Length: 278
Image 1 (cartoon, rainbow, N blue to C red):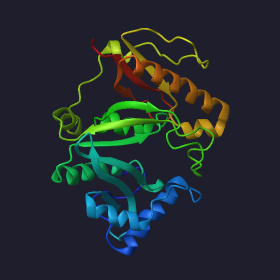
Image 2: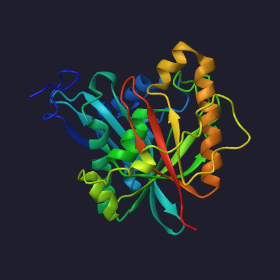
Image 3: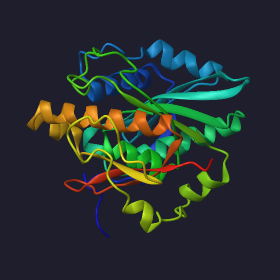
């Protein structure tokens, strides 16, 4: 059997709520490890503790020695008169990535919330981060509700956000939906060839006045935006500008995201959007 990418075992990882002061402190530490020591939006241990008393989720993936390898945090409230959950943070430490812990943490979160009567979960992610798009769309079966330019402002103190702003896609995860269940079981239908080969809306680096008026289009993003940014901030900003333009253009005109093709490291990655029936 092929070993996990980091050499770590995954069968001895336990996911549980953060309870002790030491576990809560690890929840703070993994935020700083992920978003950087200068990140201004770190959620303190007190909030990680208190949120759990009112239906929130603050949990970690721990190895056999009690070391936190991953973390998920969110708040439960009311949205349009019904219980809803906002999943604010998901993080996996660098040497534990590629083991499927992100999905396991989300499945744990789903189980907890279903027991509480929550059926809708939302969160945001950077549309230029291909691995997150692959997790959210292909592994979890989320829907994209809207695109928000610079949602969290331009200065969070995190190197992950510097130079590119904080544009976000808002993902909706209807956790009790039968289609989500099929995706989680690995039974998502493949993209039709007409969708997989749709024209690329942001093929040009220029932000055009008009974009292709087709039944389906693709929006390309880099395989790794942080690598692209390290090589050329100008190129990374061009990715942001053209993707932003395309998402806003199509979502405002009734298109919806119906898939994501993930080329992996070094490959090409595309969101697939289709016009909704009138």
